[in-house]
Length: 604
Image (cartoon, rainbow, N blue to C red; front, side, top):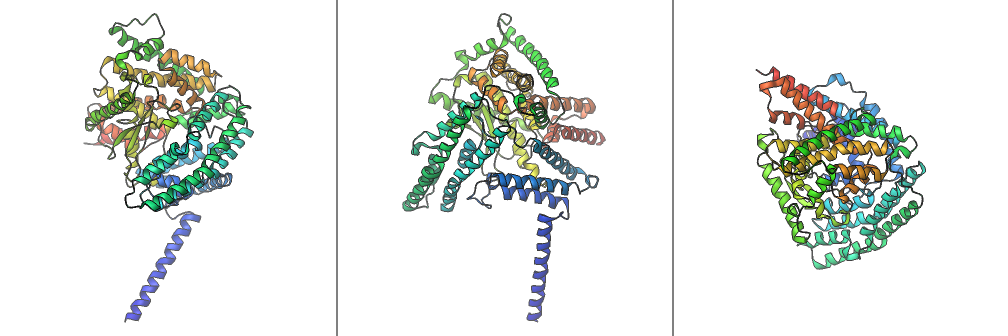
């Protein structure tokens, strides 16, 4: 009897193993049985290729000791796989799906089409810039993502340090390919990059950002004895001296040489096929077919409207608004001592505390405006010193997928004169609540959907939502003080100006100085902010167009819902319809709002 049971069990296990083997082979090498399995296949492929992405999800399960393979061979392999996956994806019939399954199909289709389109410009754009790249990204990754909770994690950290030399050399190979295609950053951008690189490389070993990070994390391990800690410290310093610092030296030497070959032309119009490339960037960022000319004129019109609103408020506050450009008036106002913090450590601490207070205040009222709320919290942190000089005034980092790391709003404290008090509320609403944190944390927390839906994003949606959130906060009763409202309008004015200067630089051949002059005279932002913003648009062509285009689309859809639903319109349900599907291309967002309107009308 026992023998029969054992034979039956062995046969069952063998059958199960055969079926599992067939499933895995089908999943990875053939068209999976169902489209959900195909989605799993896509995500697994991304995960296999990116140990750093898996770590960013809060997991240590996949090569926690490895950096991503950024070699040309790996890139070629990824492109070949992308073509194969897209061909396989098209074998699934869209007509077979509905509801969330159809949304998932269309999101992935849009993403894969965009990736295929981007292949035409594979070696265009600046893979390294003063705003980002491997030389800065590796530090952010090690500090913010790589956790050290035991000895193995510390050894994995050291292993990753040992791979930085290879990673940087692969980066330079990519940059050389860009150079061969006529894609060289302007000389003023390369100079800023070299400043960043020297800020990372020049400090003594004990003051290096990576050394300090490793030491601080290691010190927190109470169950690790002194001898183990000392040995790990020595291993880490060995990698820093023999691998990491020489890698930065090679990159610095490369860009010092590249500087001799660069010129000051700012726009991508200077590239071979530059006009075609810029139109591609417009479509990728806005998910529309708008032309550069249309967006330029849209920006000019929005600038005029917003400036008129600001002047109306200023006149009510007894300001003389007709003798100087609006930018000078706003700039003078930002230098008024009543709006400034003390330029000291105490002043910087107060900025962080005040930002947190602003966020906590509005968070308490958000259930009145949202039928869906994020579970994850958000905290305020200063921008790390090594990159604060070239970073924006603030930026957001989403929570980890497992909820172990909260969302973070990073505030730039480098130049406190660039942080007037009347502008703080709007920046907090944009980056944190109800802006990026609401949208991205909710997207992180979507359940029952393919994993890729938590990661893929449309810039026009994410940034359009954050800009819409600034206005929503004001509509909800915040930023009602006249000067805080000016801060809101000034921030919106910036996004309108972006339409003008981005197209001006990359389509109309504006110089860096011409763009800086226009933005300064129009917005009144601090010189350090204006310079940083313009140089950001130069290295990220088209990205800055997404904000205003996305905001206008959300407002248009909200107005459409109000008009069609009348007394059935509920702002909480509208926001749920916007957020509950994650980041979507604007065309797909419009489709989902139409579905929401139709379903609401059909309810008894």
